[in-house]
Length: 64
Image 1 (cartoon, one colour):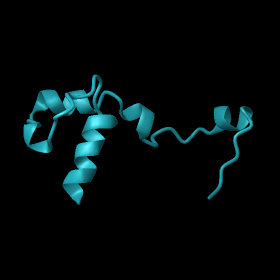
Image 2 (image 1 turned 180 degrees about the vertical axis):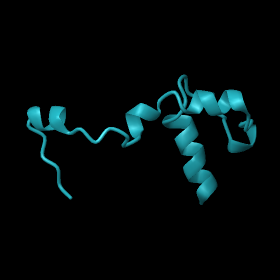
Image 3 (image 1 turned 60 degrees about the vertical axis):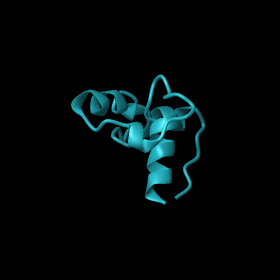
């Protein structure tokens, strides 16, 4: 199960550009270059900025 989640994450969320259609986790090399490549988009997904002022100003509603 974890390989399915990690493969989808690398294929569709963390890579720009996305890997080829036949990509499998066994094709992924765990090295410094790939680590850097997969962290380029982290600001889109990580909750590292707690300032919700722009969200509130746009009329956003937060449900917890």
